[in-house]
Image (tube, rainbow, N blue to C red; front, side, top):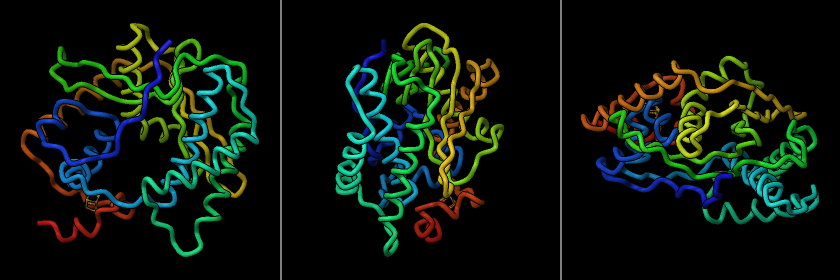
Length: 271
Ligand code: SF4
């Protein structure tokens, strides 16, 4: 069984040398999506209030973590007790990390977040009595023999038999092939981390995506173990990360992603 530890800290300014020593899937995804955004977030450490959508996702994730932890420790848990935990977390988390609410938006978003949790717990394919192999496990893989930085990350859930599960909250019903593609860096990274820490190959990698439609939906996308092609793609992406940091290559990548970018104003002023 894998040990449970505390989550990773929020982004802080880091010297480039330090950023080069380790990489996580989320840092690599930011790098691949826009290097200037990476620069603002990780090199300068500019923090921004969370958006409502991000906060809903964080809250749902927090309650599913409690649910998984309770099953892992064989502690009793009910929908009512989770609802109380949800109410507490909803207040407490935004004291630690401010949220950018639009006028009157919060009560509706809170109701949406709970409806997603409630729906998941009633429709999850995971049996209530199933033992987990690991919950919210912080792991590292030393990839020095490949000339790469240490890979770090947190596995949401590893089901009995080595099935890795990642929970997502999404705004639209996802297309399965696109979901697999857009989450490839994360799911390949998790496979590397699992293999390195257990010496075994994962039996599968599943996305449990909760869709924020009026009536929530749960889309479970199942994949087999990471392929050699997927590992090779991840390693090439990590090489690009290291080479780009060495060159301090922080060019902007204007595109569709800019509409969601919290650094838009900084980007327009940047030269
Ligand atoms: S606005 Fe677009 S180009 Fe600028 S930092 Fe953000 S993602 Fe990159």
